[in-house]
Image (cartoon, rainbow over all chains, first blue to last red; front, side, top):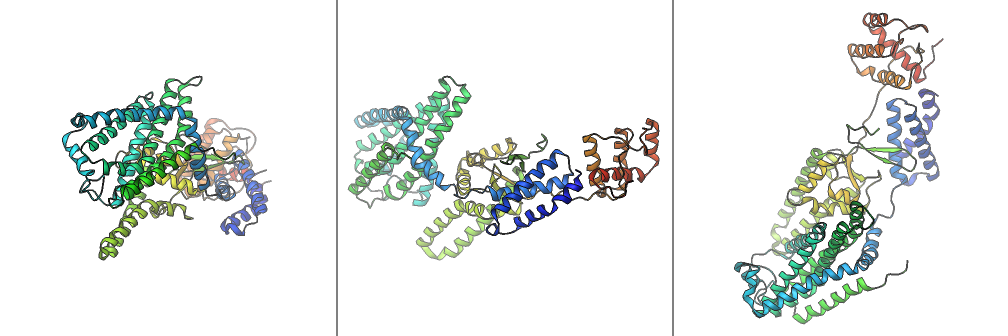
Length: 316
Length: 253
């Protein structure tokens, strides 16, 4: 069959498909459209194999590409998948990494308690961690006289701080995760450092008598923020372990598997960090909310987070 | 189809054919980005001038508007039927999934949220490195979302087979030779006669016996002489053979 025969024999069908493509999707007859599309695919394959002229091949490939977009269009918008990932895959993946999470949590809590107690006992120890001007900033930020707790005087509005907290907190969490690739040492370091730093600040603020503003401030958003940082650190430890002890896989394959598993955790943690940033910007910093109200919401948030990760998912 | 000197990405369909996607490179995407930035700036300054009298409430509304415009502007436009922000549309680009399907809302959302990763450490450095180092020019957000930014318009290979009298090939031609002759005949109308003649001479010297009228192949010298003296006759003969190969056999005896 020559190109001309081919063209004259099939021209009618191609024209019909091209006209269908110009029409509204809803006006199409599905069965006929699918038939035309599949036939055009066969014709394209044949035209390519037989070396028919380039304009003919290009015409066929344009029409099949357009029809392909209509035939295989995703109709469920893909948002359902995001919700499923967040509500089911994320907590399941966290449970599957429970030992990593435990290690990461201890890495934060132990240095935090140690430095917290030490600094509360001897406040000048804080100067070995940060310099004097930073200490002054902390004094100002958590002073009961500050109308916006946790902020410097020239800090911006709630919305601006929301953006700042997102960038800052997600930055810390990503640091804990990504640095895990250095056989886990980076995650170890950042988790322990952030734990120690937080503990030292808490200890110092307590020692100068600002505990009444500091703890209500951090109680609520830390349910999400601290948990998310620990989870990202745990994911980083998994990455580190996959490089250090790949088991029966090659190191690269092991790393790829770990990255695929932990990406769910990092995605879920990012959402938690956005929630934390919103709470920190609009709720925690508000001086007009009484401490008992903040503690009550904080308790609710911690219970919510615990239930979210510990509940058994429906067997579906 | 996927030759190493161009950057065409092919996506295979379940029907076993492959769809070609032409990814948009750094320069054109940067231009589209700047256009979008200007449009966003214009909208924001319009908002600012409208809300200037609103005092604190006005400032609050303005900050929310700024948030919405910065984060949702690309999402809304990329989910519209054009699948492109105004900047991309001006540059003839659109966003689609890397498997050739229309962009999904989830994909669109992820690629625009992960913009923050591409912006690191400053001035979109990660995104630019990713775009420049990948053949398919995807930034990190595109990779996570499985999307790709591509040129919307196909290269239109319009062309007409050259006019002439169909002529059966004097010698059997291999598939590659047939392809070369056909391609020449489809281009000939867009070439100057002199250039067509020049190319025809190459074809004649590469395919022995192409100009012979019977089945006997002429000697090398004779071919060269014919090619140099016959003028446009060579082009016409090649076009005639191509027409025959294409299937036009009306006048052949």
